Image (cartoon, rainbow, N blue to C red):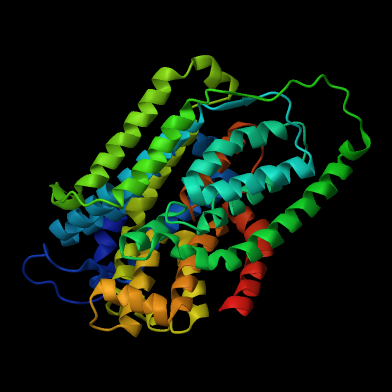
Length: 480
């Protein structure tokens, strides 16, 4: 087919042109131990931009092609960046790709699969009518749960009941978008369990309940968004004529089927917390070092998912409209995203020695940390973004101090900087579909259930830029 030939030509083009991607330094001798983040130029981020544009534009202009070949498109961009890097930098590039796939992608997709599988076995059956009040209450419940079972866990648990409650409504896209804003992102601000960057801070010495310091920031954001949502939902509810109609349908009492899956869900959340509390040493896998407890955690999550599959009747999953397509789509697309993202993260982690030094060095005030951490977290993995600016703040205020002491000093003397980094990494994940793990999954489940969702850019232009950015300005003016 023609598109296969085009893909081959583009890969060859990237492979032949990759020397331009380097920053101009000579690389004599072995490439095994070079720091790629200090060498690569911003041109090396082109494949990452390419995969983002593919996700944004192909569903609009070539929907049939995208539906059948999104996995191949993802693989193309992965190969487009991997081939020239491997040719040019050999072992160093191979180790970098292995590292991001083993350390970042594997636990990411295992956790997402586990939560998706277990939550798919929990069915809320009965008559639940999605009025503005009911919808707002469901979003509030999800927002509260997100800090205690993770944004992914809360989103996967509630998105299907939320969609079923509103299947009679005409305008549903905005509902799912606000669900993503609050349940899948901002709700996870209060504990390390809520969102990966906060968990990373916990592993580096930030006390478990310290993140409650950003409760005021979260409340301001949540309350404004809930007020806006309730107003929009009320407007559309009346516009559709539901407010004037008396519903004479026979109501079925609400009941929960497959409730034993909450045991598996608790097991997954507990394993995540436990993996941060113990130190069982490290093990090398294909040259990539990872802690034993993290491997055990991943294995336990897989076991919880398998137990859910074996113990939950197929009828419950059918009634829950459960299919494997959403997790398959996310697994394929994010494999390509993580591969294409590798140069971006390496450059970012290189700090003042990388091609983004002009960004890193310009971050000085609390509002700088909030916005720069946030904007980068909107498109990149927010965990390493958080770690970059967390480390930058430690170096700024506690140079040469051992990390445990430096963290205590930062929290004691300049807590506003850590608040800015934490809030930015969590809040801004709501800006795009790829800003946080559950965003794309919620979108995929919603579309599969018949809710037409905005495109990648449509989500940003119609919703996140309009509703989120003004609120973040307000948060900045009040707190940073």
